[in-house]
Length: 283
Image (cartoon, rainbow, N blue to C red):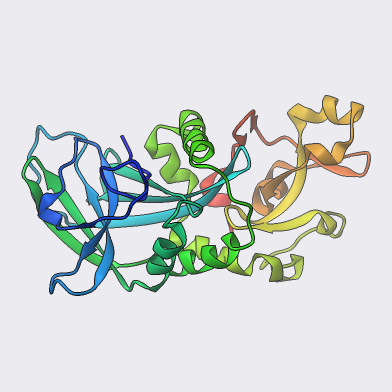
């Protein structure tokens, strides 16, 4: 269970200041909250997690890995942050952010400025232990602030439905973790419009260069028509069937031409997209 509202344990999007010892979570739950720092002065955003399996007592956080991404679903842009604790594939927690909530811009700004993140491991009696880790989401949220300022707002209901719909297609959480690249990679999205085929470190065949595109989630790509959609593409406008695939994947799988568009035998999953090996991604 994940909480993706901007207020911990409330549903009206008010941001509350919390003491870490006051927060109670159910097993498997993760939240973000605005909390006072140790000296009680400044305010910072912290993450609070409770292990999915509480039966075995692991009182200490040893390691916290961070990943983040930007997801579009039903014309709603969802910001996703994911934490994996103690390098355990069973202990992955997703938290969703809504820029167009009442306090969204102020929280995004705080995340873009905050140097460190405090991650708390919770139990029945509140925080068991915590780890202070560098905020690897900092550049990502700085990019998002500039990006979202040009977007059209959506409603809270539309946001909630988009999160539920995307999660229904993309869970389990381990799948989300694999889909989203590390935040260090994701922040390269801020340079998306400046990157061209000339920036690709390898060779791109001349006839594929006009189909080059750089995307924040897949990096250096070639727009291709998945072979499974070839029949539909012959009957309609082929351009509407183009999908970005990593350059490595396209060159390895091979391609042929249909009405001047490249077709590649890359597996395509409806409502999800191309099945891309993570090792093919290049940024």
